[in-house]
Length: 462
Ligand code: 4AD
Ligand code: MG
Image: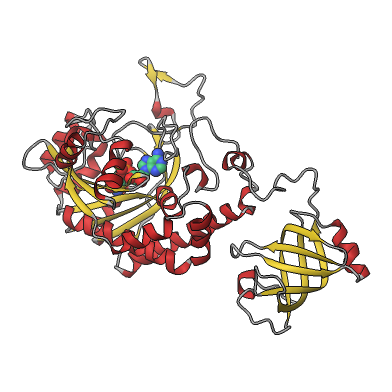
């Protein structure tokens, strides 16, 4: 008989119909005549309870070898459960064990392990409630993101992962090379990249934006959604060296339109999550953050606050709050400042615009004051920055001037500058860190726990 997913079975009536399930044993409880197996197939946060009558000799023999972690098939009848935890349970007729799981070696015996411990066994942690739920939420949120943009006529563009240009101009790139690192070929005393695979220096991308802009200035509305890489030496709970980024880019759009899009986007995907993943969200609300559902519900109904960087600095200065990093016009907002603004001052998401040009990337549109740029960062409680975006500099001379000021070589960006030579248009976009999003919506504290295999400074076991 064909096996069904446990999530489908749990909503069926207890009419004694015959069913088959496949899964892994989470727990086993035995009394004199009966054994209860909690079985998960990962289709839902909820397990099915398999009840085994131990007076049946062949079943009893099977059960003896089955311990936590074993993989089994169970066939039987769907009946009303005697217990209060679940409506239905499976009264077993036959049980087959695919693979045993030695009790003295399988590390997931306890009901609850610390997240630090589970990071050391990342290859098994998807078998826990929390990591199973995170995997399902990631999957559903990816779908939500595509759905939001596809419904609005955006074209999904696959920007490259290996690139010859530094999008953020911050030099935090991982190099990609086939040159022998001990003895690279040199010419005039420096490494001769002409000998390298691509004939020039290459890196892993930090953002798909620049290539995204080339498509936005042809297709009007595009988005990218792919892996990005940053060799930042930041050992924090919100930084990864490899993470996924969603980047819409819109032609004929200014910073106001960009902010509207970001706000509508976040509200859409939060609504989607509460509608489509109620069981997983109830789990996070019970076990991880008791406020998470209330927080998301409130945000969906709220209007995001929009203030300038200059205003933000003045509010921080007036707050009387003592910060680890000093507050001063011209220096970047630290995560403690961002959190103070969204958690304490406004108690909701805040979009900060018009940052000093010195602390933002070369491609942002310069304001008339000559000091600030049309950047916009979306800050949320608990996390600080979740989205970073801007209106782009559409003027050829100004853009080239910014590159030179920042010691970037305009010749390396000739194709990017071409967009301003041929039919330039106002355009804008933003980047959402997918893992920051998942962290935010699940209430998880550490970004390393919302991606299957985190890559961070000095961390690469799997
Ligand atoms: O603010 P960032 O650096 O913006 C860009 O890369 C632009 N090119 C985006 C654009 O306009 N198309 O990064 C965007 C977002 C951040 O707001 C943050 O959520 C996330 O990416 N992010 C990281 N997430 C995890 N680990 C890191 N090291 C991250 N760095 C940025
Ligand atoms: Mg940023």
